[in-house]
Image (cartoon, rainbow, N blue to C red; front, side, top):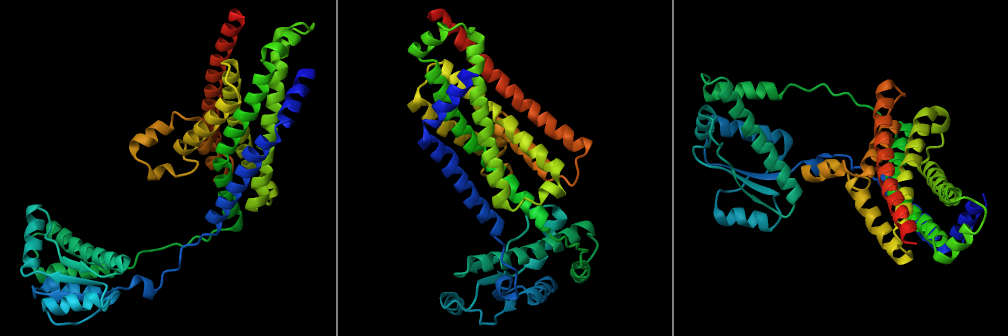
Length: 398
């Protein structure tokens, strides 16, 4: 118990580390969570989704005329003369967002390519200054041409007029859309999940630095000699130091949890979704075993403050990034996604998002979360084993 208290006192003698790694990083997470929670996509309007198009039809086929009719329903068509200087002028003066040119023979070439299974002919185009509007208009025109080609490939016996009629009829069918409203509780849970997963960096760096400094101090030769002269056994001395660092780790997790719940507005989840919230916080505390085991191993290897700071920052950032805590893994390449599975942060992210995203705690949810937590514990056990080996070697050398 005395060693445990001493460990806590040593940690409190480093207020700068506590302020930076716990206070500052927590504040950063709150700011980023606010940006994620309040950012709303602008409501689509006719002004933002509609493009001004100069459509030059050099084909004059049923397909080119139907393409013009289709674009008239979604965009604003600007009529100008088919002259190179005129077309350049309207683009230079921003009188149009894009110039689309249907080349001669486009309709016939489109049907022939669809029948033969070859690459489809392309429309000629030149974009104006509004690249987003031009891209949308180009996408709509290309999509319509692809529908025509698909219809021609499905029914090769149809002529151009019949193909256009079939595409127009199928395009007029309105899809069934169900709008789901986002409740405040779901929004708060999403913000809390973001904050807790982002805080993997806070937990990793703070525990490695603070707990590492504590254990390195307790392992200093002069301190170690005084401890060994006491009647307390060696394993109890080591257990006391680890227990003190464990208390510090739980305190960090409690701080992160309280800040996250308050800042995200997730306090109602305590009464509305207590099992899900409890499972997420258990996942957070379980993840803390990894940096705690890292701190123990690094201290046994003789690393001091400067090295601990470097390892904590670099290692914390790499694990958080690869684990999907900062950037969704869906945006990463397959190589990064495969590598992420070898980081404990990935499994923490899985457990927390699964818990807070569940409408109720079912067996499937429990299986997913517990398997993720089991892998995290295995990470911690493997790292601790390396620390025990280092400690044994250090004792032999002494």
